[in-house]
Image 1: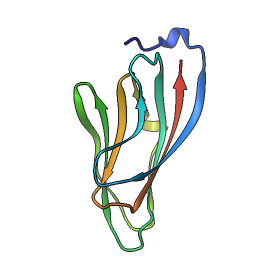
Image 2: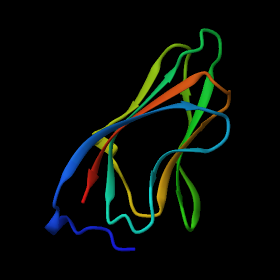
Image 3: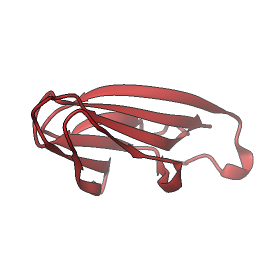
Length: 118
């Protein structure tokens, strides 16, 4: 497992992944083992599209060492969005995944803007 060195970057490609977030930890973005890539998370957009539910959102990183929550109980009032931006970007290395769960099923969408660095 060797992540690419930032001194020898070959390319960086912008990506967007979309997910319907459930009440259990679901990997919304996975970087496979031995990919020789780093995923730089630029922004995470969370939208509660329910007209009645108020939910808590939990953002975690899963690795071979376990699940580590990096943002907890991020309250998203009905029909509003919460944005995590480049001001607090995150790197997902090989054999790691970004997981998101909520306190209620099928009322939250997530959009993750990221770069794949090789």
